[in-house]
Amino acid sequence: EYRKEEPAWETALDLDALGAAEGVSWVWGGSIPLDEGPTVRKERVMIRLSRGGSDATVVREFDLDAKAFVAEREGGFALPEAKSRLCYKDRDTLLVGGVFGEEEMTDSGYPRSVWEWRRGTPLAEATKVYEGEQSDVSVGGFAYLDRGRRYELRYRSLTFYTSSYELKVGEAAWAPIPIPADANVGTFADQLLVTLRSAWLGHPAGALLAAPADGFMGAGDDAARSALLTPLFTPTETCSLEASTETKNYLVLSCLDNVVTECRFWRYADGAFSLERCLKGEVGLSPSFSAVDAETSDDLWRTSDGYTQPTTLALAAASSPDAAEALKALPAFYDAGGVTTQQFTAASADGTAVPYFLVSKEGLPLDGSTPTLLYGYGGFEISLTPSYSAGIGAAWLEKGHAYVQANIRGGGEYGPRWHQAALKEKRNKAYEDFEAVARDLISRGVTSPAKLGCQGGSNGGLLTGNMLARPTAGSTLFGAIVCQVPLLDMRRFHKLLAGASWMGEYGDPDTDDWSFLQRYSPYHNLDEATAYPPILVTTSTRDDRVHPGHARKLVSKLLDLGKGPSTFYYENIEGGHGGAANNKQRAFMSTLAYSFLEQTLASKNRGE
Image (cartoon, rainbow, N blue to C red):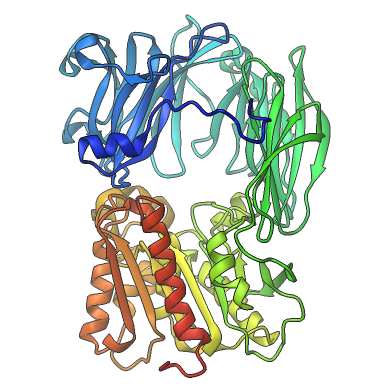
């Protein structure tokens, strides 16, 4: 049906109609299906509903056959608004956390315990089956089927990057998974998959390892465990593991080689993995794969997009992924004729080569006259890769302006080492990298300080806040700054909402860490004597992840310092940490940012 030019869609749930009927601005928050194996139809699902885009959600059970929520009076599961964690243990049992009061939450505002809740009983009668400490980031538990094997996994996230795991295979007893605290773990059929953040048993940080689950869990020491490990990915200086997806018989790895995507296809048969093929991408494009139905087939959805290419969707087999059947493509939302993507590197303060993408019209005049927007993030091991944006295209590129995406340290573009190079006391490396890209653009003649703007949100808002406050940036490098849903007060960030969970990234300001944290706390580094570039700060009243107080305080201080004429602020009353709750709000927020940039960077005179 989907192959048809006009598929016949069947509406299961109209979120807009639901919101209108209930008088709530519901935003889709995700779903958790009941999985009873490949032979049983998945007709039950827990649906998350977010009020105005907040992280906290209401959760209700939905019947896909009836196209309706299952009423509580009929035994349907329903959870109150909270930052909950849940999954089906079986048809009549949920594993759930985060809905049992403040005493069952961590300092970071996430669940610190796991409870079993039986259908038809009050939530208050659920049974606690696992718990962590209040100082943990979060605690959770899952039960699932993996190619015929039943697993139960529970974890304590001790920090943002360290965890302890316990595993139960079938009817076996619970047992700790003997891996490093900073490793991640998963399964594929009867195999454990371990991703390393630090070197272990002869394998480097960033490696992906496989081992038979039963043998590994039963091994008596590291020597016995080491003999069972099979490396499925080993990083190099330029290549890192970005993500993975699974089909019935294949594990598909998405890697980045100098920030260019490469996909590797491992087939699992007779208890062993074998690498069948690799598909290499090209600069400026981001292909990716996801399973059509990982339980029953090796079919894959193949999507691809780039700065100038709208998203395309194709159907492929994991055994021959390059022979894809084109299915759909989004229309072009701007004229990309003559727009090219180039990749360059800039030398950071310590000599590190920092890659970035430059998207601009062919024949760009190298006289510093082009309004240019530099975007960055640089944190939490998150990689920035090429993607299509109608907003950037229509509001910026189509006018002949240039767009730049910087792959600075703190991100994941080169694996754990790239991220760890800008952790805590080394955070300055991310900011030096971003400044280096700005200087490289200026030295190449792409733009000039009066024509160069920067933009970032969340941790990227901390980045752009530092571009305002750092004496090596500010008006020396930038003519305008857009700072969205930002983190800005590093003295109190850990006291607000989810902030305590980020101490693994930034440090603990209640300790000696404040000695370095204060150096990149924008709120504390503003002064009356400095002339700052124009800044637009935006946030959301309903952001329950990064408190809107960060943005409010910075703007208030700028006004107190007499910087009112160059300080602009907008607070959306909805949107959560995404800043907007629907397409209308997203369009408004995007227009606001690009109008500000156009007026500050593209006008002949700053006062126009």
